[in-house]
Image 1 (cartoon, helix red, strand yellow):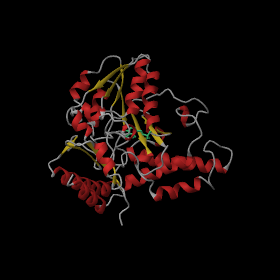
Image 2 (spheres, helix red, strand yellow):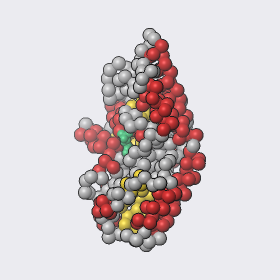
Image 3 (cartoon, rainbow, N blue to C red):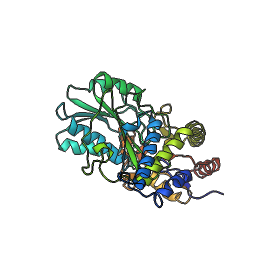
Image 4 (tube, protein in one colour):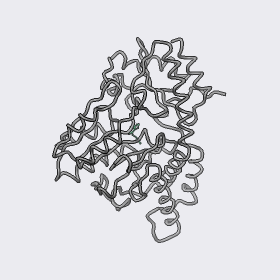
Length: 377
Ligand SMILES: Cc1ncc(COP(=O)(O)O)c(C=O)c1O
């Protein structure tokens, strides 16, 4: 039995995996302790659960547990990384390099810092959504303190050349931050291999709870320091004060360990389904693919329907399937996606774009249903 509308908006958010919920439940009731209560067993139990989650998140990205700090999600982690570096390294410079297609949590943070005296370079992307590495290297200056480039784009799924970016940043002694919100749990991430210094991720993008995320902060080679956004009791080694969201953190940890353990079969299955959907729609001859076909996360396809307004299309099919145009945060606004515009798409093609993002619970039957609905459009 199909549940309608078919959910194909996993890049906006994912349902919690029931195994994640089961792991979280005791921490709302029996094991409700404050992880900072060091004087009794309730606190010790909570602190132990948080430590296990820290190890699980660290394993997902090949970091050390001591390099993981819990936040309320990727928006906060993005803000903390960028504002934290800007404030901490003011003595070295005020130049930040980022990309025109970043998520609003990065773009708007940079815009905010511009008002505080930061100098920001917004690198362009090519038609496939990729940056030019030579242009990146040429834009580094003596006062560059941060390179902030996302791992995978939320609208197109395009993966930037992270390893090469990390090498360039290291060569020039510049901190490299990557917003890995759409990559974490979907593809293998290795902060050592790729010389990543700071990384943001969010639980609700990989079957964990909403309102819980993490930031990875490199501890050695180089040791990266951040000025906190929130002052208070000094939780999370002073990087992020505030009583820890223990159930959320436990859920994030469990979600990370499931994603890690099931990554290979997930990738194979999801990519097959995504490619099937994509090929069927491309075969109509009325659709074009946005973003590099070769450098993409396995669950995402962004397609432009010629001579069509995607808002109208989504309303017509709102009982059949749930997808989005542009990012979820801006899909209510009738303006073409700035990500697709930055890739050089015409207004017409940008207005006609739809993002299909598949996930762990997507079935062959669901994909067949969506193809059937769309192929005669
Ligand atoms: C690339 C990217 N960065 C940041 C965010 C914000 O994440 P959160 O919802 O955890 O604040 C999102 C969510 O859409 C995203 O896709």
